[in-house]
Amino acid sequence: MEAFFVSTGIVALAEIGDKTQLLAFVLAARFRRPLPIVAAIFVATIANHAFAAAIGTWITSLMGPDLLRWVLGASFLAMAAWTLIPDKLDEEDAQLAKYGVFLTTLIAFFMAEMGDKTQVATVALAARYHSLTAVVCGTTLGMMLANVPAVYFGDRIANRVSLKLVHGIAALIFAALGVATLLGAGASLGV
Image (cartoon, one colour):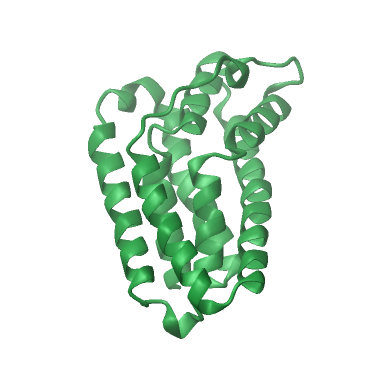
């Protein structure tokens, strides 16, 4: 359950102000049909994070426990720093195709998530916890916790959330995971 809860919390916090959340705001404002947008975000996230977690699981088979511990510890510390850098929505991500609400959202969200903070975090979490299912379920829930309110309440909540504070908390969690991993906290998990 630790893998699930940590994955949920980290991704929910990391997603606040992330470019995929900004994309959720744009799609909600453009289409004003929240249900198909939320459904497409859910499907895109599961597909993207299952792929990322599979890579994280695969990486653990390539490295010994000592090397993996250092790589993961450094990765979590890098994620802490990256979380403090504000995201911007690229014009390419905001272009809306004429495929309908669901398919447009699915494609746009999946593509925007490629190489994004939360996808990289999913790779690291899967490598750290050796539990593909728990990590994918947790990271997907975290994405939904951050994006569903963005779709439904958009402008009403965007101005009330301190992105600096949320990013700072997420960075602290990533840093704590990095330090704990470097100090051997995951030794019982083979990390």
